[in-house]
Image (cartoon, helix red, strand yellow):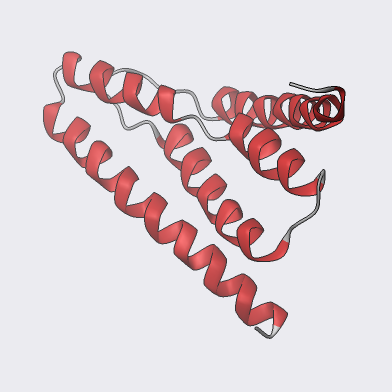
Length: 126
């Protein structure tokens, strides 16, 4: 890494803090109990994917895209928690819920990226 890279690393780090705090706030507002459905994690990941889809169409620049995409949305989305929630739900005796969450999140996330991109292109007149 060169000295020129440090400002980008700094904006990614700052964005990551913002995204992680937003994710924590959603998790605190919508707690998950093993065996139940992890709605907070699902909403976080799908909304993050929607925003990523829009960002890839709209945002550019040396600092804006790394700050928002890698930083804020990378810190906000939590696919590691998704994997932990799937296992915890299955272990808590709800394998059907775990499988529905496992498949539903992937489908919803991919559709959200597409929808975010399509909506942004339409709004921007592209």
